[in-house]
Length: 165
Image (cartoon, rainbow, N blue to C red; front, top):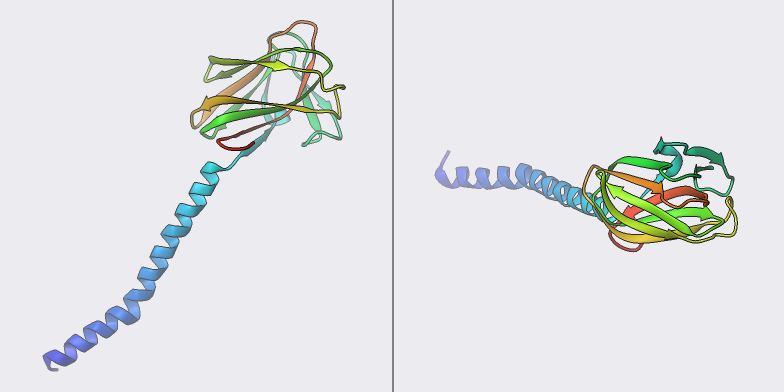
């Protein structure tokens, strides 16, 4: 075999076999990057009934709730804890209440913010959403608890993310 023939054979093998592999790897990395970026940038919803109940918090059936249940917080220190949340900069709480009061949000057991609760007009089937800028690191523990006396707040779900919730 002469040198020119070997060069041609080498170019052919590189083109025929290596190009599809290179193209496959490139597209695989691009798809992975797009998927992880979209997943990280999106919003994530967590049902209140899937959270750990604290104090006297209890589940209440509600056909209008996103998961069919609410978690009722009836006295101070009743609450719910969500674990393993993704990193995000905003928190939305979908709730119902008949009064005005405060709920507390803690991240990794550190007080972050107290949120005003307003009347939604009914304890079931009628909801408001409270949205706050809350810095949540990856795999965080987020706890929502009742602060006010003489008010009941039923939590339907939370949504975490960085953009519009």
